[in-house]
Image (tube, rainbow, N blue to C red; front, side, top):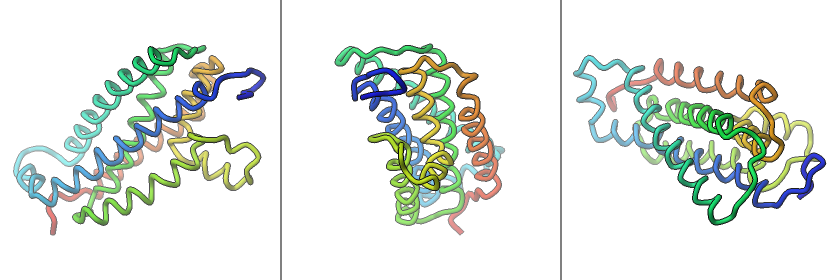
Length: 207
């Protein structure tokens, strides 16, 4: 695959996208659907009686999910490297930073979906409505080069695109965090905004 003046294998181009795709499913469903399920079962109603505030509960959900995502990402990365050795041109530390920030941004979006919904069916529908456009617009399977400008604009408004592109540039081109500052800022803004909005909209009970 020709990639910015250098020939790389398709697996090397594809792998960052597969990592991001795994994060998207685990983050959105692991946070969004789980909270809706707990609300339906009355688990959140019991938690309401404790001194726990909604922001603290939601932040704990994000942190616990991020620990799982980072651990699983490291395992997948390591095993994939053993099975199909590929080159990582940039820093592993910076790659991990972009990956972790992407986990935070995507997990926070699940909070907004789960903030008030009590129906698992509705939550599933909204999560699918969110995940499938991101999956096809974030250059996971194929490049959007040559697409209409509005498609590119829409893609670059999605956190999954910034996560995938950032990891791909680090792995294949040796980019550093300063060169990816726009993507890092967007991922941070989305994460903070969605976490704040989710805590403001959040309700403990089904009623």
